[in-house]
Structures are given as C-alpha cells and as structure tokens.
Length: 198
Image (cartoon, rainbow, N blue to C red; front, side, top):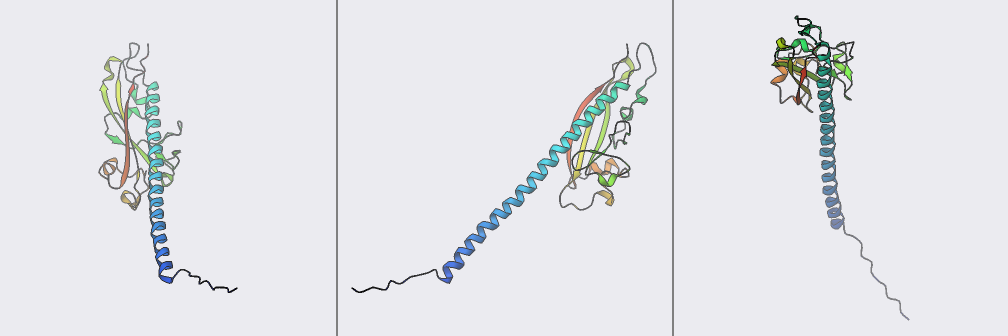
C-alpha cells in the first residue's frame, strides 16, 4: 500500500495583507461611528440639562410673583421692588444675580446644580432672563412675560467671550446674543402673574 503525500496550501502574503486591509477599513468605520455617537450623546445630555435649567428658572420667576401683591384695593403703592428678580421688568436681557436666600442664580455646573456668583468659573451653563409687561399692574392684575435663555459653550469653540468664564458677571448679555456660533442656546417663555392681595 502506497501512501500519497497530500500538499497543504496556506495563505499567501498577498491574501493576508488584503484581509488585514479590509479588517482595518471596517474597524476605522466603527471607531468613527463611535466618536459621532459619543458627541451626539453629550449634546443630548447638555440639551436636557439646559432645558431643565430653563424650566427651573420659569418656576423661580413664578414663585417670585408671590411677593408681588400691590397695588391692590388695600394699598395703592406697588411692591414689585420687593421681588428678587421680577423688579427688573423692562430692562431687556439681564444676567440675574445669585440669591443666597433661594440658593439660585445665573450659573449652573455640568449637572445643572446652581453655582454662586462667587465661583463663576465652576459654571458650565448660564441663564439670562428678559421680563416684559403683558398687562400693567395698575389695576392689580399685573402680568409679566418671562423669558429665559440658557446657553453653554459649543465643543471646539475655544474660550468664552472675553476669555471670561461662561457665566461671568462681567460678560454683557448683548454680547452673548450675537454669539450663536460660539454657544448652544435653549429658550423658553412663560408668564408671572401678580399675587393680588384681597
């Protein structure tokens, strides 16, 4: 009985290089897709936090109206100046000052927690408010339109305006308004009604 030698054939160097090249192209596509996904997830998270901040501000402004009781049948003098923020009605876009009593202000950290004006460098998000009359308070049924814009720095846009922190008190709200390429914005509006005293 004769034993026949069978030849074994392996992969050639060319076949191996082609397989590695195809594998490398596939892996680079997956890596690129992962990078885009991570960026999109970060933006979605930031957008959700900014929306939450804007809603919290609208609630704060509505609660601020609890201190706005006059003019009324019992007192003819307005007490709007006793509110924390509503007294800035008609001033255009403003950066609201931090209230220690309410532990709330313009700056917020990366998780949406309020940041004191004493530490503006800790702020990742910043809020501006604009208050305008919808119905004057003369009759005792005053109504103020409350607008909030929350903004944060876009990825890859370098330093904020004037190399200041994002929510620096020195940064003018008008400068932020024209910087749509530098910041992302969330804008929400509502109204605050006078809490008329009986």
